[in-house]
Length: 427
View 1 (tube, helix red, strand yellow):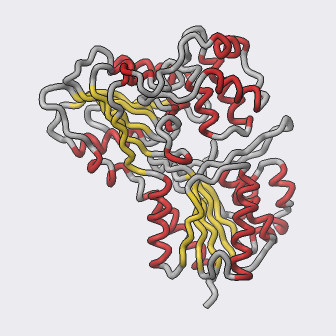
View 2 (cartoon, rainbow, N blue to C red):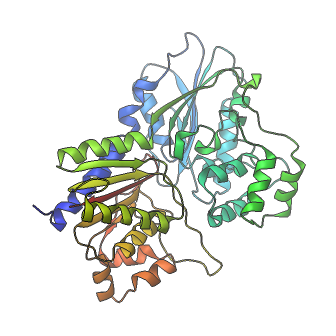
View 3 (spheres, helix red, strand yellow):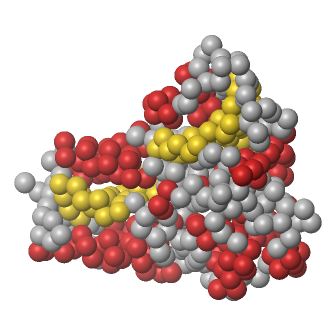
């Protein structure tokens, strides 16, 4: 029996909800906690979109421990805590509140002993939220760098390589500040491959990249950066700590949620709904509209030929795409809306195929939606509304189109983040 529009939409929404729920710190964090110290202090610090709810989860798991510390999260992503201070700052463009919060975090771990334990709670968004300039640089310099990075088309790993070499907080520097205390990092991964050095630019782990690599990336993407930044990268005066650096001691890094686990949770729900799931990967990267085009091609093959699998099925994928904005600027919409519209334009009204693409943190880019849903009639309804889908895609204005159709996925902040979630349903 063919899937109806309402059935397909309901199924896709359930899959997204399952992916988000699998990364809820209130459910998954406690089982990853280390043994508390026998006599030393427990200092909890953190950065990221999930930092506040992660801190609350630690307090719930250790109700009888004396805890102190501070975490920084995105504006609007706060959560009540009893002992751990919660600060808020700007994301994705950093602000003075984030720089001040990074200093407070560094102060919180200063002067500890080998008997003490530092819990670092890290999740996506941590880089922007703790943008603390290296000596000789200003916040305005790093804000200009961040704008250049977001417009460059660089991958998240490439962006973080550059950020680490301009920061007084990232690239292992937080761990150096906490020494000789034991540092245990509890992480929600939002990066392809779950590389600890890339999550929030790796404040507690060695940095395998170099100033030379950062300079090469700037040249490759032809970024125009402030003169002070260019001079800092050229001088390479203080390299980040590298693997094997004795100052970092033993790195204890624990993942509590990852994109792969989120996709597996969605796949389990898909089977219960009568859909055969195929996880294409948790690290699909590239220009958003091109990723959407590729997913449309796979779905078309499944629908027409039963390859790589027959319907009813759902193609699941994760990973962070990019949107390269030209000199003409762009409209409204994040990378998930752009990928979804690219998919819909390529499908061109093909029957029996629906798709949902959204950010698991509930915010696609800087808008108020997590993403959107596209259906076989999306392009036709857009044209009735006076919108040319290809022109909308050309000016990066997917939010306007999906809002006009009432097809935005609006969840509000989910207080977790395992990056993008994409599901293409073939009925």
